[in-house]
Image 1 (cartoon, rainbow, N blue to C red):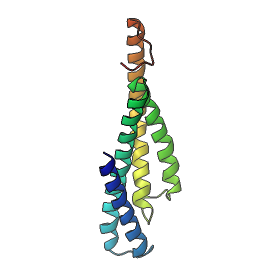
Image 2: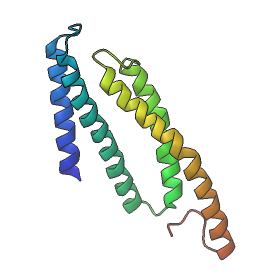
Image 3: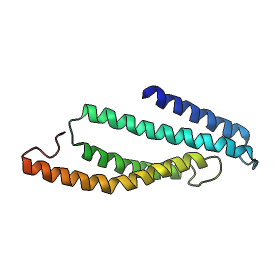
Image 4: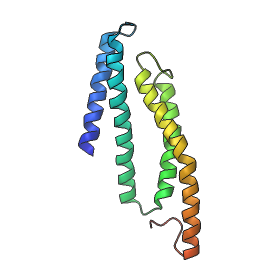
Length: 138
């Protein structure tokens, strides 16, 4: 998992450097050939990084998985929106593929957050009835 994450990160960095070397305001057709792989590699890198972090947290912390997913979704929403703004906040231009990747991370977090919160409440009520501590890993 670490190697694949690193490969996607390096490929995204190479595409970003090529995009910057190509020139900021050259509106030719080559830009799409640079922006599409840049978006794919960077979004893949972000997704793999989040999955990797989730697996490490689950292994290290004895907590309810739904609670961890809820916290991850909340921080994905928060950081995705902040980094979208910091990356330029637009769908076009040099920061476009990176900004869109962060916006998609926000959108995924916004979809997962209410689902995981409801699942956590259901599991917590079920655990409470069985006499199992609410926050323990099941």
